[in-house]
Length: 287
Image (cartoon, rainbow, N blue to C red; front, side, top):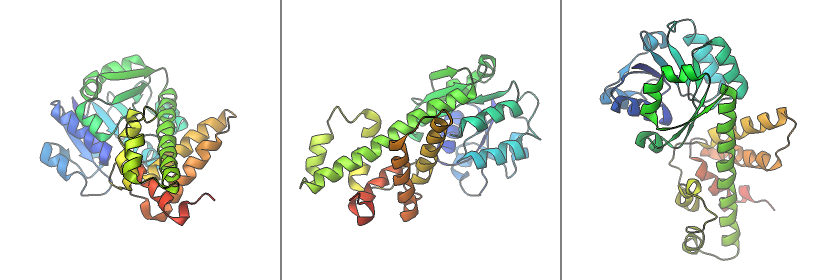
């Protein structure tokens, strides 16, 4: 397929790289210059304008930071120029309300496709894809979807797929903060980091998803792919979904606050595991 990928953050580049490896023709675009260079070397074509990037594409994929960015690109730049037969696939984590809006703006050719998994999982084809929309739309882009992963869960609407993504994200965001607090308790009681690693690193209470960030959380490493800013954004979206149905999420409110605090403390570009740094400073004190 000829596919345009809009958004060259960590996940956008992983998507483009995976599609190139599967033999698709890939055109890439990013709002700011410089992030697509690696993809160009890998065989993609870069365009400076959305209209040029999507010209002749059979499918357009967006992987952008938030509702504002997706709305600006999809409804402001993409909708006027997208081909009548082109399927629009949004992999970004946005609000269910925006996904519903996008489905109405691109009738019979919109698919929500949020991804569970890190860029490395996308690269290895082991991520889980949460497809939301009509089965026939999914079928039309089956070469694209199957190239990304063999694990696809289909939901009746885009909003449901987004709700599934937010539920998953909220769990991991909460687990990361909980493990950071567990480390803080152990250190306060006199345990060294090597003892915490020996105790919790093999614990069945620390699942595989959390194990991926265990060492970074323990050491305060900042490298990663899911920034504290995006973590706070996703937690806020999850809280918004719950409140719209009358549910209260006091733990989620606290978790969101920790990522917001990490972001404004200078860790805005750091991975969510960097929230552990707050528990090594007075700013992270809960007393």
